[in-house]
Amino acid sequence: MPDNNDLVNMLRAVIQEELKPVRQELQQVNTRLDTLEAGQAELRNDVQDLRAGQQELKKGQAAIEAAVNDLRTINRRTHKEVFSQLNAIWDDIKLLSAQGEKAIR
Image 1 (cartoon, rainbow, N blue to C red):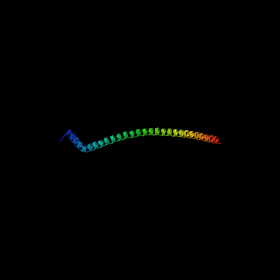
Image 2: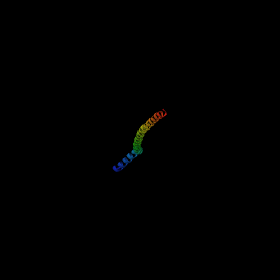
Image 3: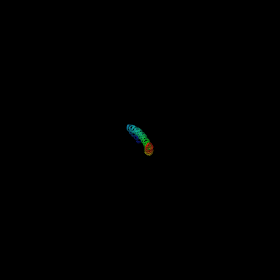
Image 4: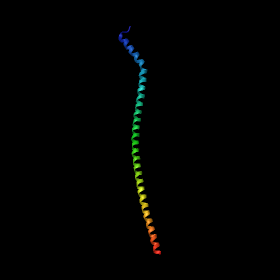
């Protein structure tokens, strides 16, 4: 009859043999988990890059809007100046026409 140490060793060997599939499955699960965690970290980095890019786009959009507003202001000012000068020229033409009519009489 085997002694206690032999029984313990036999029981240990049986338990280890029975746990092999569980250990293998656990190892596969851990491998998949590592892969998922790496993918998640990559996605976080991508989201962070997208957010940074979005901020850059917002800054660029604000700069473009400011430039457009400046151009509108310049356009209005130029428009007013041109029409003011045209009105002055027209007034001069009227004045010259009136003087020419007086000279003819």
